[in-house]
Amino acid sequence: MPNCVAQAFEAAIAEAWRFVGQTAPNPAVGCTLLDEAGEVLIVAAHHRAGELHAERLALEQAKRASVFSRVHTAVVTLEPCNHTGRTRPCTEALLESPVQNVWIGCPDPNPHVAGGGAAALTKAGVSVHWLAESPNGADLAARCCALLAPFAMRMTHGRPWITVKQALDQHGSMVPPAGQTTFTTPESLRFAHALRRATDLVITGTGTVVADNPSFTVRHVQDHAERRRDLVVCGHSAHVPTHWLEQARTRFDVHFCPDIQKLPALLAETSALWAMVEAGPGVLAALREQNLWDDWLTIRQDAQGADHFSVTTRHATTPLALFPEWARCAEE
Image 1 (cartoon, one colour):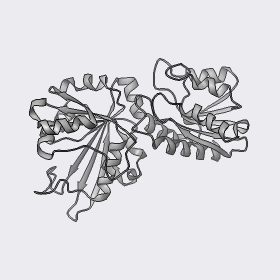
Image 2 (cartoon, rainbow, N blue to C red):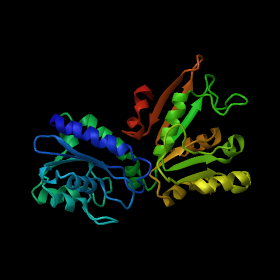
Image 3 (tube, rainbow, N blue to C red):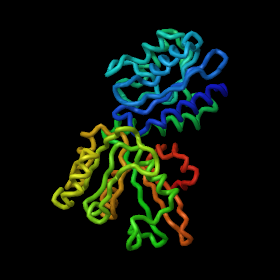
Image 4 (cartoon, rainbow, N blue to C red):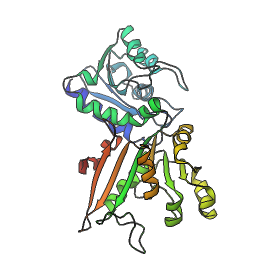
């Protein structure tokens, strides 16, 4: 894989990551356009459902920037779609452009359409390259798969990717000291809120609502504009304060789930790609017992007040790997 293509993938992943948390039910996808010499012309990403996919947006931006005729290679984090949904196929847009080479980070995880985009491009004479098949492409391919993991979970299992966030003090307790709402550092709070921003749905329990009066809003980092998420409360609506529920419904689509075994079906009815669990020991134990989680982020405070991150994952990849804080995470 040429170095310019590797750099193009880095740029496409970074641009797509900016919009993770607002594209559902579509995946976050990035696209970089290069000229024949390997110079970057355009970097674009899909913003939200109903708007242009990454490839179409990149090509439109190339036209506006008067560089469309120079486009030679398209680098995309996900196999271009070859079907018509709310927008026309991206393969069609690529074939109507000067693109001669397409590099693909991940195949489409939808078993009904996987490989169709690449096949259509190849049939039309475009040279298609799979990142994973490149001798030096494994690390970048893994990052593309991490970006795609929530969407892939939805396509293969019919539910969002579920990340559990658990904060523990030096004694292993989840309960903050009296008069405090947290015992984690500002850096950990920023990480937690960046994770909230990236997710589409929050799962909590009635016990957490009663004990903490949580808002579940995104703070410490800038949220996506006009973002309305889903909020699932494990338990009965009668067990939460009326004033809390009224406030929550101004910001979220609130659902109650009295039976944890029915949670997968409830999650399937939403459009969420990535769910974040912020709940107490009871809900966490139930999720663990049901194997209803995909990765488990633990923020543990030591005796000196410093925080340490660790991640347990049930899969070969995790979208948590794309956070800057991943370098501090110990995998278990």
